[in-house]
Amino acid sequence: MSSVTGLLGACRSRWILLLTVVLLLFNGLPGSTARAEENAAPGATFDKEFTLALGGFFPLFSSTVSINPSQGGSGQDVSLEDDLGLDASNASVWLGLNWRFQPRHQIQFEWFQLSRDGEKTATRAFPIGSIGVSIGAALSTKMDLALGRITYGYSIIRKETVDLSFLAGMHVATTKVEATASGAITVNGVPRRNGTATESTSTFTFPLPHIGGSAAWKFAPRWTGDIKVLFFAMDIDRYSGHLIEADATVAYQLTKTFGIGTGLKYFNLNLQAQDTKGGAEFDYQFFGPVIFGFASF
Figure 1: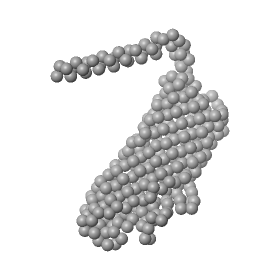
Figure 2: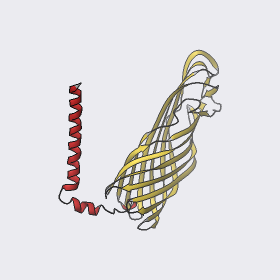
Figure 3: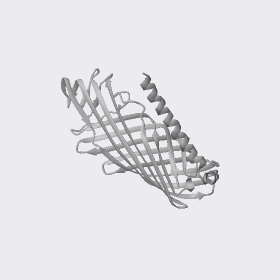
Figure 4: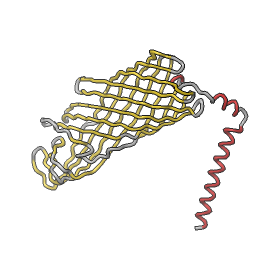
């Protein structure tokens, strides 16, 4: 026990020493006073040429899937949370990048991936593609959704503390749902007592062009708020659907280069696709906080 206590004490001492050295380097090196004065009132985040943000997104889900079997017939909406047992909450790494290559012109990039799995005993009878699930059947389900966005922005109004922009670009969504049912089930209408069957959608990739706008406001020397709304509706070849994205964030600049931020993000996606394996319709709504750190220069 004494050796463990000694090791913990040594580790604690090293962390204290490291923290002390960092503070001394930041506050005591030549030129640090000049740097502190330089960082006293950094410009608005939308004035920076490059801004790279990394953080976490923590949404709550309400989602359904409808799978049409390749043999024909229509699917039925199945709740991924209530019927298939997926967690209603999720967490993902969130990445954002903004490049303002001209005072009124910018390129935005955003990416995150949400993956969920769950298990449940069926409390009602329903179909999943070619599988008929009966009450009491055991269900195991996985869902993957990756969403990326690239957007061009043009500043219609550009002032020292305000930026109003028109936005146009494309989301790219990749999604898949896989469900395995065991127990009292049917496959293509044929009963399988104590059987097991898996129904899976293809990994569909949806190109989702969008338009919208944003408003940014530097309301204090170190604080900038941003509101963004994007939407689309399409019917192209094998793909159709709509998307709405609404974001509200606030950023605080710790220094001229580094800062932290938080906000809320809302997505409403209806995605429909058809291929040789049959069709599928995904209806995803998720909303939650995002927390991030950023570097701008």
